[in-house]
Image (cartoon, rainbow, N blue to C red; front, side):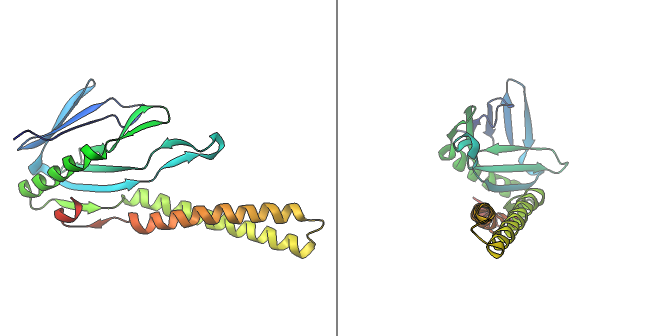
Length: 200
């Protein structure tokens, strides 16, 4: 049976890396070097989705696409990250989920068999989740500020303060949409321990 493999370039700063899963370890190699992590020494496998980010000022250009990320941590803290999106160039990415998903399923299954004490987690790390929560709170505060400006404009008279009403309404609309998106992300992305079958 062929050994599962997966190749990807995560970002501009990285090199294309090939990951290979053997009976005993997960290995990786690029033109920068190579590494190996025995399956029996894997302490945790975490899988979560990263949202797509765009730049509205550049016509909605994609900075990073939505992608899956798998973080494998060894007992001594070392490990590796594998993503499903392949970097082709600035603003250009290739979705390699079709190859990523079966590779991760095999990795999870073989890790569970080699180390029954390994943890399997679905959802973002606490630091990433807290960052998203903070962004949602900022959106809510900005929306509240916009609402206050809009209400004050109405109170003083829309005929002379229509700019305040317009800008306040714009703040409320933009921040409201972003806060709603962030709320969905915060709810869905919170890390939780799962079974290997649920993660795969």
